[in-house]
Length: 252
Image 1 (tube, rainbow, N blue to C red):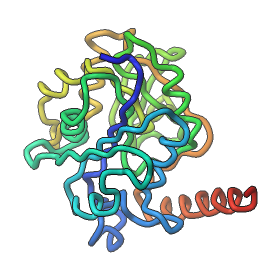
Image 2 (image 1 turned 120 degrees about the vertical axis):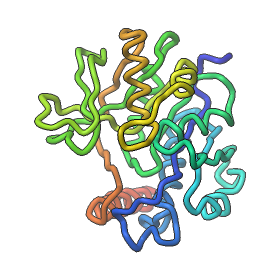
Image 3 (image 1 turned 135 degrees about the horizontal axis):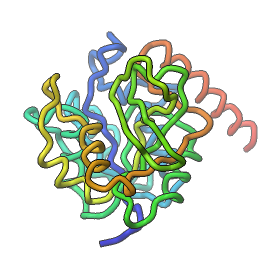
Image 4 (image 1 turned 135 degrees about the vertical axis):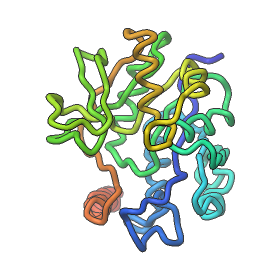
């Protein structure tokens, strides 16, 4: 088993109801942003900023749209496998469990298919990962973490997590881009559904934290970060990527 991070699992099974008509015919990660699907930008940024060339895309809603667009990945100089998230395993934990069935038992980068961030943050995660870490969590600073996952830190040690905390005394948020070791597998396999009936990745991380507190660490993200889940955030991503594309064009 390799200790190097050579694989990435991209979670792309969701519809994205807050984007309304935009996701009527395509899954949320395939919504076009600056003339490309959002998911393509995420894949390319990981490819260009890390040694990772092997991807697993977890699909369900309008899966054929994703598969037809990306194929086996050869056009993008990567290798892509697909995993269908079962209907009886809803939630982010179920999605990750589906993804890891398509890859070897080794550490992997995981990203939600709607999280757009500075490519330097992928590099920071890979550089910080070392054997013995079961979960290396990307965290980003937000003025209010009540819509995401609050993370309490002591240096790079994770003290606790809470999904959608109210009046939290932390500004660190689960960024949706993490590295997991194979230690996550048995935890995901034995997860119980949350009160909303889903298998939650946050619950799996909590279990890892309970089992071995020193093995769950965090990397503080810097620069751009966007959970592209609303029309307003989509517009923000458009402006960010359009400016980046314009800079690249002018530099050529």
